[in-house]
Amino acid sequence: MTLVVREALLAFRRAPVLSALSVTTIAFALFVVSLVALVALNLRTALAGVEERVEIVMYLRRGTPVEVVTTAMGDIESFPEVEAVAYVTEEDALARARDELTEFRGVFDDLETNPLPASLEVRLLPGFRDTPHVTEVAGRLEGFRFAEDVRFGSDWIAKLDRLRDIATAVGLLIGAAFAAASIIIIGTTIRMTVLQRGREIAIMRLVGATDGFIRRPFLLEGSIKGALGGGLAVALCYTAFVIVSQVFAGVFFSAPQASLIVLFGTALGFTASAVSVARHIRRV
Image 1: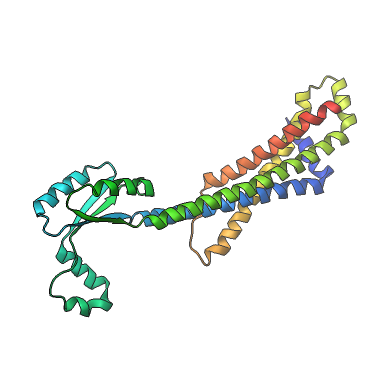
Image 2: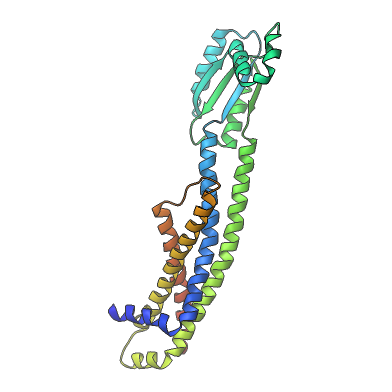
């Protein structure tokens, strides 16, 4: 094992420029993917805070008896998606409008009759605050005979979801292109190392070394390059996060998420090395 580690580390000294290029390419590939993932993470966090305020408002026909409303509230609360239902009377609606729309307070004071209807405000449980579930519950509320109108404001949330999905897809495409470049560069580095050590590999075979024994230093070399690239990507992503967070507050990756990026870089380097060694070691 010591020999494998020593040979893998010596490869960095034999080709320092190509090794640095391999690590840098992996780092930028994972940096692009990580940056997009970080944006998606912050969007999800922001949406989670906004979704807590998502509610469906069912406006009631005038003259609907309180007993009917009370029975309907029990039925609506039994929906599996519903967290709570609040009854807002006509007087409560007017008082709320006066408090929130202070610029129209004079208009409200001159009213002879209350133009605002009573309503039921329906809040959904976490996990059911997305557009499909909100739309489904709103459709059920429209089925009540005393429902005058049903409204909910999730259209803009759906637009943010689409924006997040598009940004993620674009980032993954760019990251895939960088990942492909990383595999090519790492593969080229490993290939040159194999060819450079051709005579040494031939001697090792003469003394009984197996292909598996010969491959191990190259595989470890690729894994180390991938891990270094992943760590550098996390550092670059954190630097970008610190700069942006001075203007926009946000959250960074958790320790397991950051470790996953490094692990993915390690797997990328290992894969590139395995492919290159399997292709070229037979020719030596």
